[in-house]
Amino acid sequence: MQAQPADLIVDNVRVHTGNPKQPRATAIAVRGTRFLYVGDDPSRHVGSSTRRINANNGVLIAGFIDSHGHMAGLGDLLESLNFRGVKSTAAVAEMVRGAAQTRPKGEWIKGRAWDQTEWGGAFPTAEILDKAAPDHPIYLSRVDGHAAWVNTRALERADIQRQTPDPAGGKIYRDGSGKATGILIDRAQGLVASKIRARTPEQIERAISLAAQECVRFGITSVHDAGIGSGELAAYRSLILKGKLPVRVYAMIGGAGNLWNEYLKKGPELSEKLTVRSVKLVSDGAMGSRGAAFLQPYADDAKNSGLLILSGAEIEKIARQAIERGFQVNTHAIGDRANRTVLEAYKAVLGGKNDRRFRIEHAQVVDPSDIKLFAENSIIASIQSTHATSDMRWAESRLGKARLAGAWLAQTFLAAGVPIANGSDFPVEETNPLLGFYAAVTRQDASGNPPGGFLPKEKLTRDQALRSWTLGGAYAAFEEAEKGSIEVGKLADFVILSEDLTRTAEVRLTVVGGEIVYQAR
Ligand SMILES: [Zn+2]
Image 1 (cartoon, rainbow, N blue to C red):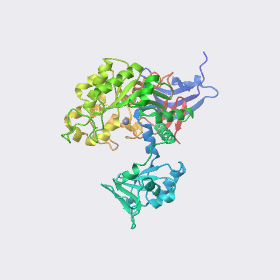
Image 2: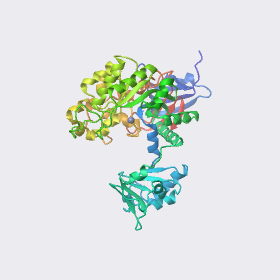
Image 3: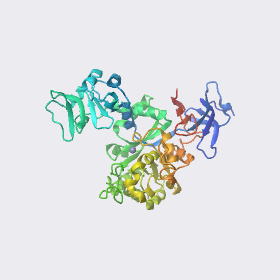
Image 4: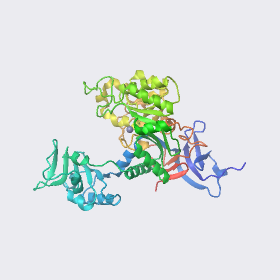
């Protein structure tokens, strides 16, 4: 039988397939959107129009699946100008001028992290920004978030005039005549910040497009967008129509509101680029701000045990609707009380082993007696390994020692038979999945602290960590037959790295469905 010619062959490469039946290979071939061949001798598949890539002994793995990120939020962050380390107001003005050229007049320009001590200590003025971008309102946060530098358009939008009083807890800087100079301190920032309008459809689309490019730059080929509204949905549709969405998106509907009700009527939407078959609920807040719901009070705040945002009964009701219409439920739960509430609500509707693949997002602190509820009801723990190493600084003061036994679990979940998926929660954490991989394997921060790792028995092996970033994410989206490993017949979503997975490995090439979507220069 004549072998089929490939569109793309990559050889001289160390392939970590993620397929236990054939863990290693040195070449792959792609035809159309899928893998045609995985092995050591692709020569039978060389055709007259086959493109060949010699990977120079790089490492090829399945594309990363980030199981929990926020695309529009990442895009907003990427779009906002970053003045960290910028040494003059002229340089700030130049960046603002550049931004003004790329967006319509009247649209807000946002920036962050300026620091007047970089240029001698004098606070800058609205005038500098007025000259750079006279037709755009501008809002630039100081590096500590306690001051904003705005231009005249922004002062006008907020109707700040000579007679406007300083708000309680805030100060409007003024010249000798009482006119605002463009610096707003603390609560005075809100006068302008509250006027920054909701994003337009074009802005959302631009933000998501930027975020998608950022993802593929880091080797992410699929993202689970953890809570979208109709604006994001429209942006995804538009980008797909234009052929401008390089990454695949598994979108969770944000909350049980109008969009959820629409989808309940029409049922899940499945396609190769965009899938909508889940709802994202939020059962409590975050631990840093002591909003996460615990069974016992915070160790550093004896009267406060946080707050439940949704009751078990509410979660149960939505979960029943979801099951009836073929949807998955993914609920944010941080504290042990929130986790227990969600687990019990899920259990009430799932009633034992099943293939609904309900998820708990974060699953950060679980009472050890509740861990079995995950496995017994086939519930997925959707974890973020970098949260462990970011939050460890204050973990023990918030939780006390005893509760750490159920905190930031990973290996314990696997040992208990709980499927895990890994993610970054970008833009809360860095987008780069290699940092998540590193945190999962070492439980250390970027400087190698603490020695031996934070809660080190939760370290994952390299294989487990990679799996949590590939097949684990695929499974959490019902897509393990399509992606997550390098196997003939699966979608050709892969990454070539400069070296084995380490914090400093570089992404050389990212391919989604056989198409090169990122190539390092
Ligand atoms: Zn999130």
